[in-house]
Amino acid sequence: MEAYFGPTIEIDLAAIARNYGRIKSQLSKARCGAVVKANAYGLGAEQAAVALHNAGCRDFFVATLEEGLRVRTRVKDAAIYVFHGFRKGQQPQDFIAHNLTPVLNDIAQIEAWNNAASAALHIDTGMCRLGLTPDDLTRLPPIARTVPLVLSHLACASDPAHPKNKEQLALFKQILNRFPGIPASFANSSGVALGSDYHFDLARPGRALYGITRGTTFPPDMENVVTLSAPVMQYRALTQDETVGYGATTVAKKGSVLATVEFGYADGFMRSLAGKVHGYAAGVRVPVVGIISMDMVSVDVTAVPAHLRTPDLRITFIGKEQPIDVIAEMAGTIGYEVFTGLGPRIKRIYI
Ligand SMILES: *Cc1c(COP(=O)(O)O)cnc(C)c1O
Image 1 (cartoon, rainbow, N blue to C red):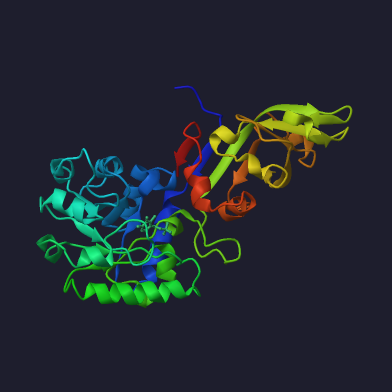
Image 2 (image 1 turned 180 degrees about the vertical axis):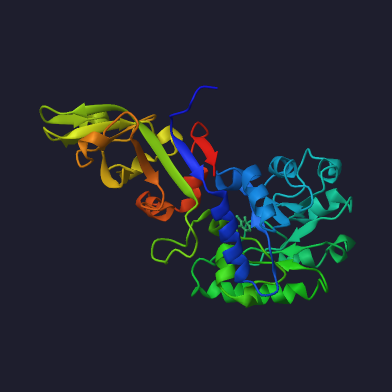
């Protein structure tokens, strides 16, 4: 295979494992699971699952049956819970043959599953999204006595002061009285940070594993996992003022040096970042100039020492210098959306 010089996402699997350890150390009695849905937030579910399994994780959560099957190819002796549950068109055998556990979300799913094998239950305590309602709980089939896990999801955990956290906690505790002796799971990453009242038997962190924090106003509690960089395709040393890119929105000055870089909105570099975002080249902060194109973007590399402006220069857009949360805030979104939006043609490299 030919050498690859295109855009890359370096994913530090050891950092994921260390973040898992950091979360685990905040739990006193609860086990620590891991959410690897949406291809581990775009970073690679199979690789992340293996690293987390090596770090001691034995409870994985995915969204769909297909995601569960992919994780199962790499992780044999662990529970894999499927959030979307048992869906139309699926057979119990699709789960049973691979020892996957559906998370049943309503009475119809419970009846269709019909005690085929063990399944978890999701109870809605305030998301108003998926899960059994308080009304559903009054007419639960007998399966509810034997499930291995009852879970619920917090709506506002990323805001520790939000009153909804305590309301959901009180409701979940009250509902758990109906499930004596059955393990419970409540906390996502932010739920872990809310303290031991929220931990129950099994935590389900996702974003913290991947180095996404609660936003730029919080100190980073987790280690950076991702470094995204892209190569320069061409340099432009301007001998006069020039407008750059579509719409001629920006004028670059005579004497400046521009680099055209192989990273565009088709790769998840959102157009809304134009005019705000920087890259880093050999440690130098380099502004993005003009509109972001589908497959490329212009960067002003005038400040990079001339001897470093070679065909081998790479521009880093996400990493320690410009963390995922900073990029996300500039784009008016959250790190989850940026990571899951990074395109498939960027090569993932695991270190
Ligand atoms: C995505 C998800 C999680 C993980 O949330 P993070 O905020 O990424 O820690 C946990 N539980 C459920 C039900 C989820 O959908």
